[in-house]
Image 1: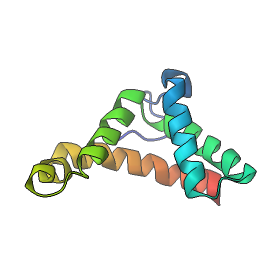
Image 2 (image 1 turned 90 degrees about the horizontal axis):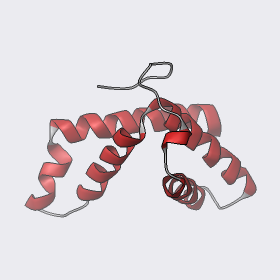
Image 3 (image 1 turned 135 degrees about the vertical axis):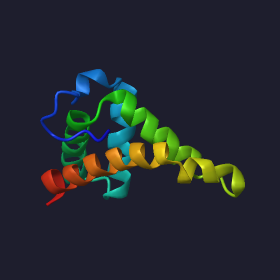
Image 4 (image 1 turned 90 degrees about the vertical axis):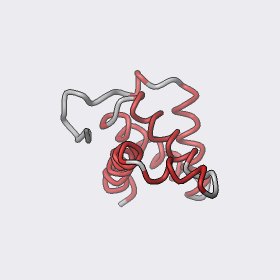
Length: 104
């Protein structure tokens, strides 16, 4: 089930462990130049994502993405299942919203 801004299923970053927050922001910063501006935008991005999807759904999507990198037939189940596509879709929509709010 997709989570959208303002839904009751929305989370807050207080539900996310500090290591998950740091991992997200550091990875985002690395992709955006490791500048002070990137820090601000990536922190904003995390806040938006955390407000849209609960931590458990974030972990689920991250796991699907990670396992989907397995090559060949072994990885195909992680890339092609309906459950994986739904979970990853929720994360991608949250990230797209964060992109609009924080990077433009």
